[in-house]
Amino acid sequence: MFANTLWKKMWMVLLVGLILAGCASVKVDRMDVDETVDLSGRWNDTDSRLVSEEMIGDVLSRPWLDRYRAGRGKDPVVIVGSVRNRSDEHINTQTFVKDLERALINAGEVEFVASSGERGEIREERKDQAAHASETTAKEEGEEIGADFMLQGSINTISDRVEGKEVKYYQVNLELIEIQSHRKVWIGEKKIKKLVKRSRFGF
Image (cartoon, rainbow, N blue to C red; front, side, top):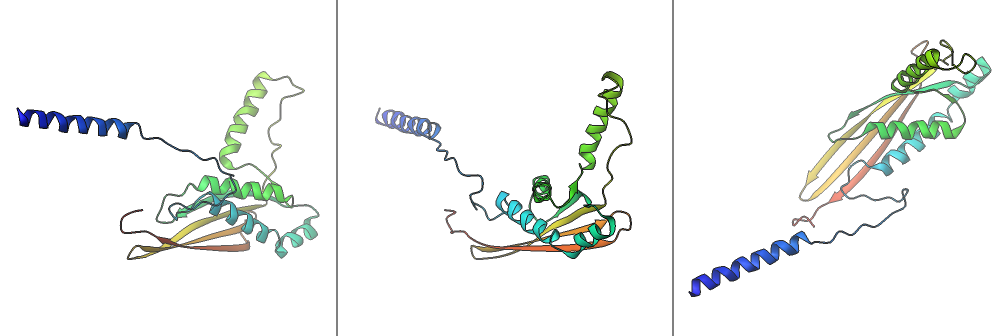
């Protein structure tokens, strides 16, 4: 009888515990999108934004831009190519590419054209217009602006761990290449170093 009562009490305690665990509250705090938050030490949105702004500022301040304007009498047309993730962690390079594109466009120093993936969708729309839009509003083939330069690069990492501490080292390399001649007119490099400390108990 006593053992039966004890088992009932133990099951009741277990049931209450499961109910309380299922009712655990979740607290969400809204933050400014430009606020820096480092939870894991991995590459994040702040790294992407700051690196893109600094590197675009650097490429647009170099002599190649003035030389091109002096020789051609116009602003160069730039396209952003691929940025390869050669790091040891998952990095969504598309968000970094978009940060680069935004920084280029907002600087107002160069003309900017859509990427190859974006152009495919636009060309399909132009074909659809040729078949269905009025002659006065349909956009013609062969009127695209060709890019003069392509910006491409890679993200690399080196990690060093010992006794709950980890140093994460990121190196972003970008190159601006003249499409006609394949000549590199600018090479940029940005380094980020983070010290991540973890307690033995995971707190």
